[in-house]
Amino acid sequence: MKFKPSINAICAGIVRVGRKANPANQGIGTPGIWQWGTVAVLLSLSGAASASIVLQTANNPTGNQSYSGVGVRFHVNSSIDVTDLGIFDSDQDGIVGNGTLSATLFKADGSVLATQTFTNGAPGTLDAKYRFKTLTGPVTLTIGDYVLAGYGWSGLDSEHNSNLGGLAETFSGSALVSYVDAPFGSMPGIDADTVMPTTVFGSTNYFSAANMHFDATPVPEPASLALLGLGLAGLGWSRRKTVKA
Image (cartoon, rainbow, N blue to C red):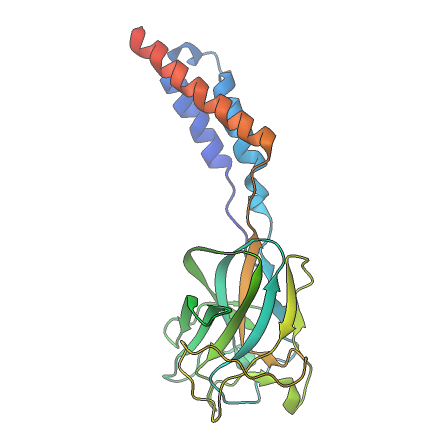
């Protein structure tokens, strides 16, 4: 499970910078109102420290199919930020051999939003039955449909298809997203990781293939914005006072 870092250090830094900008606070030990206002808004926006949500959960430890281009289509009900992409790790023993597995996130029109690759030398971090890698920056998904798919499966590293046996994937229980279907690519299953799978058979969430971590996109509350404005105004005032002194 992935956790976002704490902002305690940031808040402490604001207080220190505030004292430097306003020497009147030095030695008193009580930060000025702008400092506390800025700290308060950061704390209010830090839903931050909660655990990220995983899109789906694999119920089978071992894969049973070699294919390239299988995944899940989902609907975003309220804006989310995707932070990591993941790939199913059959037997949870790393990426075997010289193969490359990929996880790709697509818009509904097939355009690529993000991709991560996984190899024997750079397998990512194991979380349950998936390996994850963090994106260079969060990818925001607004309301609409998206496809997340996995690529490169072979006899050494296979994905799991519950239509061939075993249990289907368990989709996220978060109200932020809804399951749509489980698309797969064209036969014989050798699609590149830039080709979005579109064929659908039934409504079951068949594939243990690709995964992701996400959170609700932060939305500042009016009170938080007011505090931030107060803090920034106070910072400007304290700097002008320092210059005049």
